[in-house]
Image (cartoon, rainbow, N blue to C red; front, side, top):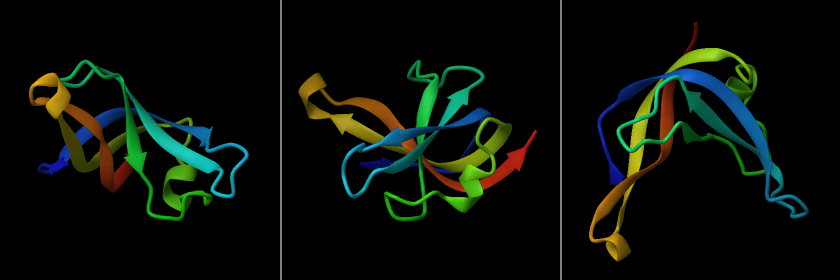
Length: 98
């Protein structure tokens, strides 16, 4: 996992129920980007600051709303694909409604 500098994304926050049927069932948060990132992705996972089964109070109140999200992108190198780097999500630092 490779961490980078802070970056700002513009898009809509969405929530999806994950791990259904397990004790850690709960929401995961994503930003649907207005424009795809450098890797052609139009949706990125947002790492939440609570337990897997809990709602993130900051992200939850922005679900369905357009935001400017500033955070630290997290990238993964795929050895299988000759060092290809792919965006894995964002560790959010700041969230503003637009």
